[in-house]
Length: 492
Ligand code: PMP
Image (cartoon, rainbow, N blue to C red; front, side, top):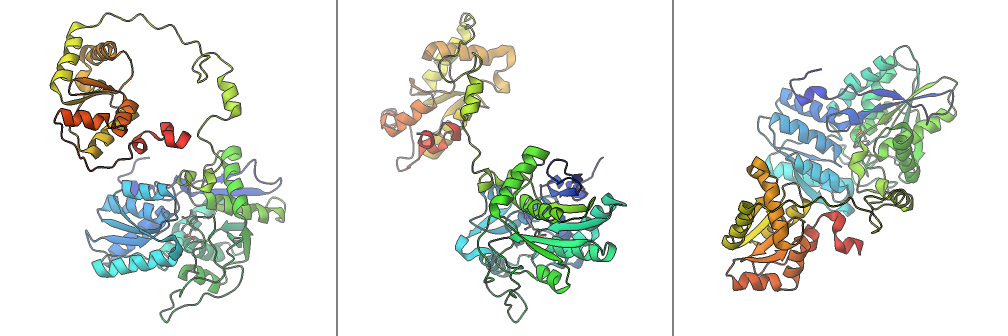
């Protein structure tokens, strides 16, 4: 398949039958929205809302777009805005995962955080404030009819087309903005009226299950938090108010059943999806599947049930979903490591015999000497080395000018000159490791040595003695610049 824009790859996600997690005699199908280009169902609405606003003239060329979003809509909008050339601002409660913020910024968006205590309402209000002050276009995903329309036009049609002759017993979804629920729900009522429409929600926040109506202001917008809302684990589901679109689904009597789902069960099922079906999806996906399996228990023989899996699991690395996934080797992995002699951490390894060192190349030795003599601050480095990146960040933070000799760069590739220089350097300092730093002709050492010399004052003294300019006022937590996996404060 070829495409003239990434935007053409939105939608048409696969419907996959679960083999191992479904109970015998029931077909459970999952619609894997992680196949969208930015990994979530929200790519669909991002594209639809922006293109609709272009058509109606609400959005003009180059105008800034702003939206309040827990992340996936923002990430979808960031992709669409990047391709179409609109600046994007996203407001987001500080409680959502760090990966989401970073992804947005990576895609060129600005992220304005709002206090967690102000919940979903706070991020909405902030977006409205900013839109009004600066004249931004706000898609308003919680109210925008296109959010539901695109699911009516596309998502529902895809499911129905893929199921073909199979009759759908139940369709299961969660509800965040309610766009998926309202759009697919409407289409199913028309085209597949026998299908049960099941909405899952967090068991500790039974906003729909309680049957208590949302209070609304004179314009019909939600006024304040719903009394049954509590913070829950399913990011993207059940904000602290019943949105217009979700209310639309309630009013149209689209919901046949509300299934409460426990947060731990949701996370267990997300992991089961990964480990037993090889399907990598987020927490709300596990939660939707939990409700689908609940429905499956009392479903007739050979029933077909479809569950929505809204996004990729990669968006949750810093959340409780990955809470018990360790960084270091556990007992079993250590035992496995120690079951063969090489490449071990316990000092018992029998390393391969060191190859005989070739004689140093005199021109490389001369090069090292001349650089050490002539450069006030020099670092012999490798482009890919994380410790070298750490030192670059450190010198930049300290405002020190330095020269970096990147031995693996194109410049030093001819005739393996970088290798020869590295050998000469190794002989000079008595260690084969990189980076190696020299200040005013004197060897300081590797990454850790430099940071220790900074902390005990030896490095500033050397800078002072050699008249090397640096920011004397800077207070740098140098260890925090080191690669996370060697961060000494973390491990000890
Ligand atoms: N799960 C995740 C991870 C989401 O980001 C969202 C959207 N906020 C949903 C579920 C719910 O989808 P919808 O907004 O269409 O109700």
